Length: 605
Figure: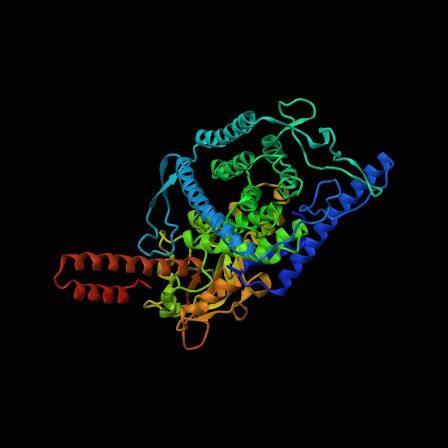
């Protein structure tokens, strides 16, 4: 979008809602954006030099400001505004924000319907005991319901919106009449002429469609270039001050805004890549330009002057993007950088904030947040739920942990990799007083599973080894014995190596316990929540209270999410029962208080 600073702010504002953004990350984003913009500028200059060499004219490098005249000496930026524009910007932002909130709700509902429709039929599969968190399910075959993806539904869902959009894009321009280009009107100056020794060219794309030579279809000029990937041409029409009512009418703007409001809803959930940033940009620009025309023609404003419709087109684009992404700083910077119009920075801030506020009230979550929740990603909110502050780390962490010993065999490591999906494993020493040997001989336990907090003493933690380290170690051992397996697509461990030892020490890729940032079990769970929410931790080792490094469990992001969801679910059930008993009369209040106290003390953490 020709906006390097806005791109950096977009990344920072997006990540700041979930992660701790440090100065090093901001510097990396800025350097990447700088080199990207340098390549784009180099390509533009090279293209200009080639065109100059071919034509023999003197080339000129100019900033790609969109809010300017397309020719005829009107090359000044139209960013002037008046005090009357401030309440109008609030109105524009509120209207566009409400429309974007409805679009978010509709897009979320359509995505859910398509997701369930394309999921296919349910297939019940029987798996071995691979759930290490629930002790009762360990070792017993477990039936899981899995949905097979329907290829036919995916094909239909992908072809239908493409055909529909293509047909509408062809039929709708047929409803509009042809217009004569201004450079073909007798008595008017052409759009391509010499002015002050400079060669001015109208770079807007006028599409003839079914019109004759010298004519164009106004809706086709607005709609077809953007659908074919050249959205810059559509933006040039909407942001150019020469685009008056003689260039295209209000009906074309209404049709363009309607198309770009509903077209993205058809492609959401399809099995091909698509974008939502540009459609919202075009929609907001069309609505803003139409709004600017209406306020300039309105009678109730009297003698008050208002900004040019082009300025409102830029403000409308910012309002649409702010209402969809729920960002303010990055969107304002992107729009101001893209247009090169710094005069309307106050109006842009007012419009974007109004749109973001209204959209946030009507739909608290953005479409991105809804998709994250729909896909089941474990995302923690920046601020911890109230229940987390009342719990300890030991009450939230997982007590059933799959561990490895410092001296393992290839067979044990293979069993751990085959029967679990964990990304890391604690390396613990099996002390002599621990009674784990009798459970190791049980065939229902294919790996060493430590159950902390019980009658047996917990093992001592020496460190943490990642799953990738185990795979790399096995690959190296296999390649040393069988060089022919170097190029194999899958790792095949021969049976003759199953008894070979594997040493898991600090020099073998194991992170020592001193560098893990282990948390004692008695600390509040909010301490662990900060590590996950702000620092992006994936797992934290929990040790027993009172000093030492005896394992108490492991706390993951899913443990914190389940703790908050379980409490909220119990609170909802208690509140519903309270309302039910209160409506029935009697001692409902006392029973509800008893149920609430019982729910507080019977939490399973």
